[in-house]
Image 1 (spheres, rainbow, N blue to C red):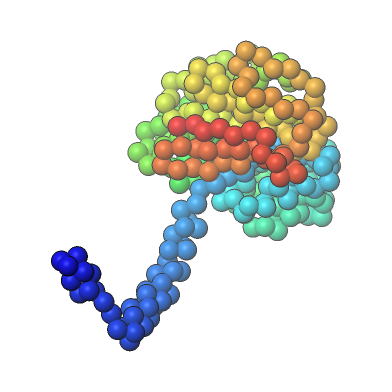
Image 2: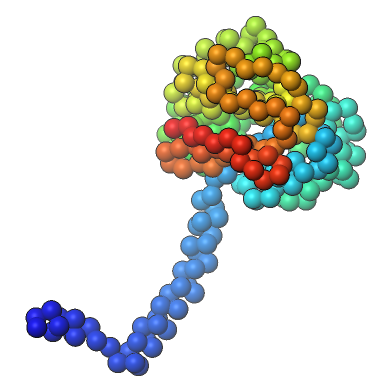
Length: 276
Ligand SMILES: [Fe+2]
């Protein structure tokens, strides 16, 4: 009987229920847009790919923009030897520009440096970008170890930064690819190992997909933008190797993890992993 009395205290008349419902609707209308805007600004996602070409008839561009990421990371070789302006304005890359999604570009060996600087509104290929708790450090074609280390160190010492992600076209760590890493790469790898916030490195140049883990750092090769695939082999560090595939790496960040998937241009997820 006691239970019944306690519950009955909260019994409402139909008019009272109506008032409660109206109050709820009013609250949702007031807070809804704020909550939606918070959700949008708090979303930290980036899609990345390099070695973009006509090989997949523009589907790489559609894959890059389809889920409206916060940033697009272009890992170099934007269009090979074609005129950058023609490629950018009227070809398969045009949807990326039309999307209005901010781009983080990295110079590739087939790219016309001065023309692409102009297209992307940059003054240098050696720069950093911050996305939430991530600091991207972009490496130019011929990076200086000390210059890159100072940028990595700044990210490491910034309390608002959880991860420092170096971005480059040519590979520092890659399996036995068509393009072997240069000798100097070992110096960069050793430098990255000194900084605990470097857990993920994005690269391209070899036209396939590799995920390798070396000394706790995940090195990605995402040269799957449409150029003819290479028939490369795995090595000791390789966790996943996909060839004859075109697709995009899609990552999202939380306060504790970076969660990534490799999505091929048919929409299938071919690999997924997290770094923390
Ligand atoms: Fe390349």
